[in-house]
Image (cartoon, rainbow, N blue to C red; front, side, top):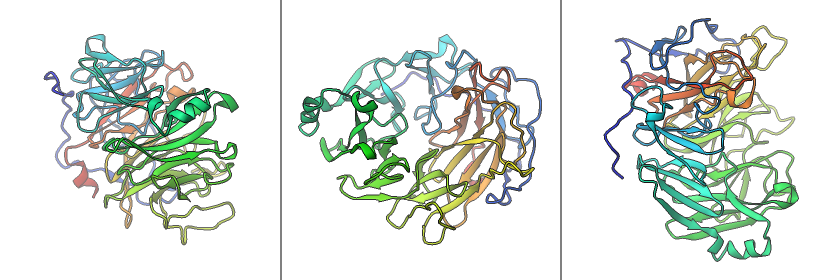
Length: 441
């Protein structure tokens, strides 16, 4: 669709000779550490320079409870050309705003508010289209005209409708709020969720939009139903199931399956904070926190990738690649005190953002820091990006740093370390240099 002429906000230029500061040894707990400075909160829309790493940051929304922030790290909140952004609302819906002026969430910038749409995701090519779920439907909304297209209604699908008739407590399809379809929106993996038996996942299915066919359908047994999320790999080759380590059967730990849901392969001990993406060679990967090693690992999506299980030492024979050490050691003066989220929206890269609780000391080089990782399987590299200027007392105060699909910008939730626990947050945006890929290859 054609949008009115209103592009994204113009960002300031970086000075000649700017370079990113590289992390000397991402697999060490001891790297150069720049403590977050105590500086005055910036004015909205005024770009300032990060005091530690010289990147350009801007406060782009105003705090209004949680209404001034994005949803989660795994999803690009910006549309395909960066001219609009999707923000959460405290009533459960989402709002679309133009990004040509700050604050983004000013009433004059508002384009639309979603209605009866869960798990909204921007189309990767059409800047005016949101995809989402509504009950048993996959829907597509034109955010400017307000027109909705029902892409698929599974309540009348020949493979799904009999299940709904036999089990009337099943009330929706879902990716459990964290999964995504394939990049081209051809392949979708969803859970059928019921109200009975503690709202557990009842079935998993994979649908091909081009053929309008359910390719695979799997009945989830009660012992397999502790599932964090379900989604497709970026190129649509695999169904990914975020099973937990306490499960049994075919869905123990993070599991990949073929689209027919006949072959299941465990690739991690459990499921933790993660994102799917492409590595520097264009291969499908998951980047995830490893609960067994306290690293962030890159997991190639193939059958050679193996989990590291309890009591297992080292990475030998697992085909997985450690990217970053999370040095959780409370006795060490360099111990890591933060939690992490991961965003792999830009091909070949991921953003690792951190969040830290009130009273926790900033001791480790990674504390209160955003880091960019180049997903080169032969030689991964990490670069300091910025400090976070945030303290997390409640869920919506977690930074959830999210990278745009083109890598040109990142946003994260921020309270400027003021009144943690009150959930009054805005967005900080980091605009990257135009040649950021050249600087990090």
